Image (tube, rainbow, N blue to C red; front, side, top):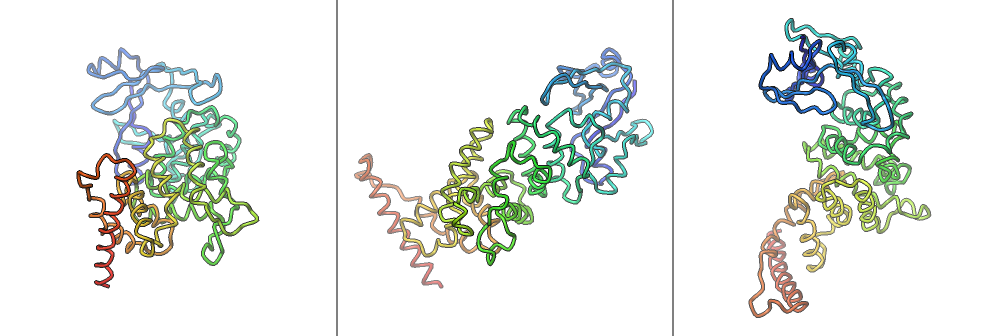
Amino acid sequence: MKIYQVGGSVRDEILGIPVHDTDFVVVGATVGDFMQRYPNALKVGKSFPVFLVDGSEYAFARKERKIGTGHCAFEVIADPDVTLEEDLKRRDLTINAIAKDLETGGLIDPFGGIRDIEKRLLRHVSAAFAEDPLRVYRVARFAAKFPDFSVDEPTVTLMNSMGPELSSLSSERVWGECRKALGSPAPSRFFRVLKDAGLLSYHFREVGDLIDVPAGPLKYHPEGDTFNHTMDALDRLSASGSRDPLVAFAVLCHDWGKASTDPALYPKHHGHDAAGVPLIEAFFERMNGMPLEYKKAAEITAEFHMNVRDLRAMHPKKAIRFILNVSAFPGGIDGFFDSAKADFEGEIEEERKYAKMFKPVFELSLPPEFRNLGRESGEKLMELRVRKFCEIRDEIRKKG
């Protein structure tokens, strides 16, 4: 029995970045051999032997044979005759197909993964890549994780050929890769790689629909179309240090309504904020299983991002409604302002501070005599809030 360290932990050690999870492959052994060495191992694999030992995963070397369509349609062969190279050959990218000999510390790299790490290249291991459509999204996710890596052109071409099988994937698996990408250093690359491969229309059609839609007058949007504007907004968010996938998703969705604009009205997009909300709802209907907090965050940012810079000039009632709505952003008002800030080239920190000054407005409670009166109760509460709002606003104006 021989055990090797494999996968992302080997890659990350070579890159010199922190290793969080260490996986191992077991070669030339039966389950009995393994259990004799690790009697406390916990079996977790169903279709082939996988065990947990002290929190690390030990998977038996295996080969796979495609027997149908989709991500799970494989016949798995895991026996003592499967070699390390055969196991590595079924992996997605060469940078993930490197093994480390635990006895000698030497690296086994039959597919050039070390060279590709040096070249900063994401390249598929073999033609077997095309047997698992989820790998399309994994490549895009690794592009987001490693911003200085490019995707090998033949890999992009192969990804493009896999488009028809993407519809066989569960939305949960697709969202899992997307969510990880949104929390990565460069989430925009997930969508740029899918665009380059011509694959946005399968699960992210709302993003693809932004291509060639003018973001606005060139004076204000020199980046051109709304797709590029959205990707730039994601880049601004990541440059701020944010790694919150929920905020990144809100940024991704903020201008979807522009795809609904009549081309005769270009480059203007009046009402695109409200038009984006039903598109977000449609996306969630297709991508079932996504957390509802992502939907709420996206809808709030889409509907209210255009109002941020008008806040100081708003009528008190409108300002109160605006602050009340954006405060419902999952995680609080700062999450909304982080998403809105990514949309703008300039700063909106003063607007953020201004909105927070009105916190006492929303801490007011109705006197007992005005409670449980239906519409009259709501009108009275708004009256009290407006009065308090004006007091705070006037104090702010006095201070200059």
